[in-house]
View 1 (cartoon, rainbow, N blue to C red):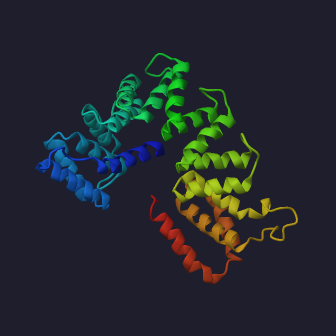
View 2 (view 1 turned 135 degrees about the horizontal axis):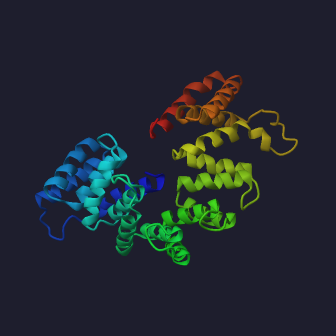
Length: 332
């Protein structure tokens, strides 16, 4: 599943915590059990929470429990990841009119995760149901299908209109979809200015993919003047949130900090400020743990060797602790 889907799924999971369990003062046993599972989830005790969600999903046909069971399978909370099982539970919850489950069920059918082949026409139906139930992100996912004519009759104007409408209402998914469409220039004419506009909108809400793409745009001068310091700021923001693609460019720009110091700056010729030196070590070290590209790993190892020649020995304990703390929140 994509970063966007995971963010949306996680957001809804915790948003559900604010929902009242019953209009009556007396809670049923089913409601008490769901409340208990919800509390265990908030504490990070996913294995215990999963057992309760699964029991409620199977025995009580509880739609919210079915949705949360799907989330646990999708994200590997309390058990190994299993996208097929996640999709099957999302579909059950979708039938119970849970909007996010309807959108995620649409994603499953679109990708053919739990079916022999992708079924975009069914995906379109689920996106439409989620949209009708007020989920703005589903509206633009449906709009994207209209743009390309997948699962629905192609209608470019309708697709754009659907996405712009909900993007203007603040839907991050829609803002990212629009930005990607303008950035990639496939379904829509390439327009870096519009791409930057929508990445900034999503970036203002802290979205790491938007931050990464903004880093690319400032680094390469796409839709804006080239600004390597600004590029590094956006890359680092994305990397700090665990966005894997942002690690290497963050490390690279800190390592080559002297390349964009003002002319005549005394820190030129690969001489870092203390902050730049520390940041170079931090991001090169973190990148080496998470990077899988062999060529980039070779470059990172070369960077690390050069940095180690100048970094004060007394810094290592504190810096290695920061790297460890950062990586603790992310896979691998």
